[in-house]
Structures are given as C-alpha cells and as structure tokens.
Amino acid sequence: MKKVEIDAKGMHYTPLNKMIREAVKNGAKEIILDNVIGQRFIADGLKGDVTIRINGVAGGDLGMFMNGPTCIVNGNCDHAPGNTMDGGTIVIHGSAGDAVAHSMRGGKLFVEKNIGYRGGIHMKQYEEDRRPALVVGGASHAFLGEYMAGGLIIVLGIGQENPVMDRGIGSGIHGGMIVIRGEVKDELLGVGARKMEFGEKELEMITPYVEEFCKHFDTEPSGLLDTNYTCIVPASTRPFAGKYTWE
Amino acid sequence: MCGIIGVIDRKRALMDGSSIRDALSLMNERGSGEGAGYAAYGIYPDFQDCYAIHVFFDNLVEPKSRVDHMLHKWGRIVHQEAIPTYEQDGLKRSHIPWRYFFKPYSDLMAGSTTPEDDVMKYIVMETNSNIQGALIFSSGKNMGVFKASGWPEDVANFYRIEDYKGYIWLAHNRYPTNTPGWWGGAHPFNLLDWAVVHNGEITSYGTNRRYVESNGYTCSMFTDTEVVAYLFDLLGRRHGLPEDVVVKALAPPFWDEIDNMPEKEQELNHAIRLTYGPALMNGPFAIVVATHEGIVGFTDRIKLRPLVIGENEDRLYISSEEAAIRVMDPEVQNIHMPRAGEPVIGRVIV
Image (cartoon, rainbow over all chains, first blue to last red; front, side):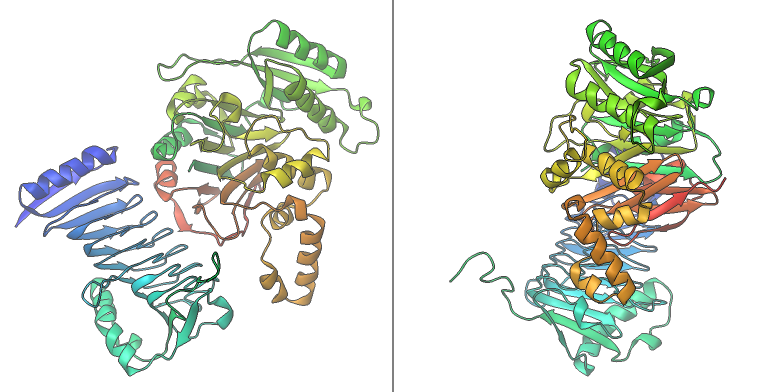
C-alpha cells in the first residue's frame, strides 16, 4: 500500500490537485494532505481506489464529480462537499457549509456535526442501486432536501433538541426520502413535501447507513435504531405542475 | 459572488491590515480582480475629532478646487494630503486618492439634531452628484475606506494597508455581475460612520433607492450596495433605531413566522414591516456593517449567501468562508453559522 504525504500549506488548489492526480496515477492508495486551509475542488473528478485524508478546513466543492475514492476530512468543510458526486465516500469529522451533497448522484456522505442551508439540494437517484445517501449527525438549517429528485437524507440530531428547526424541509421534493430524528412540525415542511409513517421497514432501510455513520465516528448505534424518526417524502412527482404553465 | 470578512476587537486592541489582507486574498476565487477594498476604525487618532474625507480625484485642478471651495464654505480643513500609494504591477491607477481632515461649522444646518453629520452628508451628496471628477468614498471620523479596482493583495499593497492600525476592519473582494467594476463601485461603501461590505445582489434596489432618495440621499455609485449604507444612516442615525431593529426592517421575518410569535413580538414586527416596507431588501445577500461602536452581520431571509462566525476572546470574526477567518486567527473558536436574517452583533465594550 503506497502512502503519499503532501503539505498543502500556502498552496493553490490547482497544483495541489495536480499532485493528487499524479499520486493516484502512480498507484497511491493513501494520500495525506496536511495544513489544508480552504483549498477548493479537492479530489474533483477523481476516480480510483484511494483514501485521501484531509487535515484542515476543506474548501468548496470537495469531491465534486468524484467516482470511487474515499475522502476523510479532519476539520470542517466549506460549501457543497459531494457536489454531483458519482460514487465513493466522504466522511467529515466536523461540520459543513451550505448545499452539502448538492445534486449528488451516487456514493455516501457522512457529516459528524451540522450542515448549513439547502443540504441535499436536488440529490438524484437511478433505480435502487444508484442511490446517494447523506447522513448528518447533528442538525441542519433550512431547505433541507430542496428540489430533491432521489436519494436518501438522514439527520440524526445527536445532542440536538431540534435536528431541523428551520423552514422549507423538502421544498419542491419530487423523489427520494428525508428521515429526521424525532418529531417534525408540520409548518416546517416545504411545498410538495408530506410526512409518511416511519415503521420497521424504513428502520431496516436506514440501519446500515446509521451503523456506518457510527463506525466512522466511533459511536454506539443502539440508541439510534428505533422508530423515533419522521419520514418526509414527495406529495407528488410534479410539485410545481401548473405553477408556471396551465394544462 | 464576492468575498467578505470583518473583525472587531471588543476592547479596541489595534490590528494592522496585513492579516485581513491575507484573509481576503485566500478568497481570491470569489472575486475577479475588478474591485477590492478595506475599511478600518481607529486609524486616525491624531485627527479623531475631524471627519476624514477620502476622495477620488480625476485631477487636482478643477474638481479639487470645487471641493476645496465647498469645504471652506461649510467648515475648516484641519489638514489635507494625498493618500500615500505605492505602484503595483497589477493595478491601474485610475484616480488620485486624497484625504482631508475636516471640521464642519455646526451652526449652518438649521433644525438638525446632528448638524455636523448633516453638513458632512450634504457635502458628500453634493460632491458625488454635481462635481465631475471628484468622488467622496469615505467620510467618517477616525476611520477610513481604502479601495480600488484590482485583486485584494494589490489593492492592499497599493495603500500599504499594513501601515494602518484599527480595532475594526472590514474587507471585500468583488466579483461585479450587474454593474461595471470601477474604483467607486468597489466595497466597502461608506457614509459618515457607516461602512458596508456585501456579497450578493439587492433585487429590490429600485424600491430601496426611491425610498432613500425621497429622504435626501442621492445614489451615484452605479451599484446596489450603496443603498445599504444610506438605509443604515436613515434608520440607524436619523430614526435612532438600534442595529437589530434596522436588520429586522431590512431582512424581516416572513408573515407566517410573525403570526406564530408571542403577541408583543408580533406587534413590534408588524409595526416594523408596515413602517419600513420600502426598506425591505430582497434578493441574495450577506452583509457586514460597521460603525465605530461595533459590527453587525446578517444574510437575506432565505440564506442565499454564505456567512460564518468565529470568536476568540475579544475578537469576533464574520466571513464568507471559515478558512479566511483561520488565516487571520488559527486559534479561532466557536465557528458557527447564524440563522438566516438573524443579526450577529459585536460591540466594543470599552
């Protein structure tokens, strides 16, 4: 197993990403990036079987279009990690900014703490085997799952009284599912979203994601594996039919 | 897309401009090299009773003699000089930055409770609308704005920003979208004690502009942010509203949220929305406003632009990106994101 270490201190993202690509091309299986501070586009469009450990604050669009690699961030992330990601895994030991998992098409994204606004905006899905998942340990701000077209969002609300306290959950949702720990007030649902009963079947569906979350962040899943969740799904496949046109 | 960052030291410990320059440069991606600028409070202790007037002159003949003439009529010029600048390869000099330290005569503005401020405001509006080749872009006491068209580090080095020491700093990196990039269109925007940096666009600009213009302000910078400085001056100084109420007027809660508030709060929010309807700002924005007493940061109600907060003892940081804060202060604590429309306020405590 070939390990490559890169000191990103003071480095612009272009040479940094060139070095990452070069390392992957040369067969690296583990890449460690130290002193990362806001460099954007890390691992974008990257393919292959490689684990990238990012020590510091990752800049915007981490893992955009990425397909395959695993990115582990020891720090917070700026906007849109997992943007249009195709496959692979992102694990964030911290919080992330707005538009996390923006248009994500595949793979898994785990955030230990909180996310900003519009998490999971326009996540997509292709049948059952190409289903992206965003798992948030803490809380989310408003417009979670906005215009969501597919995939799965889970907000575990660990240590939070209200995992989602802001408006517009699933605003414009027309595919996929949002699962939030505990009760969610009706007035927080966005246009086109409805609640569905969370039962044993749904619990079975989220269990592997919750277990994987707990494995990444070294916590115990037992307290999270019950049916005390709220499930939010599309009210229809075309929430805005008739809004801009009349049929 | 633009990059903003602001910092206050609540105990007025002074910071030179080098670290905010480095923080702003980290967000170069958020700009296009067509505008950057800095505002700092506490930089002119030797002239703290004077208005520090920063002007862009196209030449030092006609426009300057007209400004000199107006200032002599309205008060006394205590000192004046060219603002020291240093040529940068990446920055084209388009204007001559000049500064006056000025004391207005307070008996010339009848009926005003803040006559000196009103004289100063009158001079700014007159100059910017009627004197071709002169633009006053900074007019507060013991503070100053330094801006130009260029990248953050070039603009900072042009003014040698590290030579200034302030307890509040704002900085902005511009990516002009709807209006041209020019020196006067760079942020921060300032009037009197108010300085504003802004990421986003104010789509209600037409309504807001008509409102401030009907209250004696003239918009002359060809860009939306200018109106925010005038709204704060109108609501904050002339109407005497505290910062959090000004923010409530500019980015109010939605009606359905107001309906769910306790009765007294409902009444207050109704009154603000009905009184200050034309001050409501629509569109995506993240804004930081400063006065000599503190800074306030806030976003639009549905949070279409980023804003991150950090603290370290007496310091409060507000920025578009966490990494920029960490460039200024690697030991920063309590990084978090405020809720949409919620003002984050840092006040001086001494």
